Image (cartoon, rainbow, N blue to C red; front, top):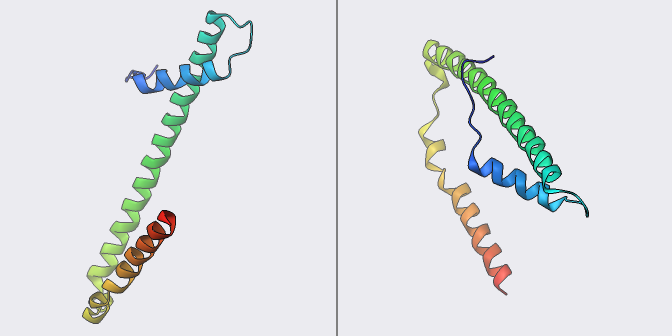
Length: 109
């Protein structure tokens, strides 16, 4: 058994019940629907656990990569970004904002 007990959130329970009711067959009893909802709930919990462990592993890998990058940047100061490059940072942002404005105008008309 694990040290930590995971409590099921209310949202997970409600979502599982909603899915179970949506897939309910004619003549199906409330007990059967409740069992299906519990199965769906366990599936959601298992998915969340897997997703959490994958994101934790990814975070560890990113941290290792960042540490390696920082170590290499400290050794060679030649990798600095030129100031000219950071001054032209407004162009992509302005194009992004302009495209979103054009998109909303297109939707409105």
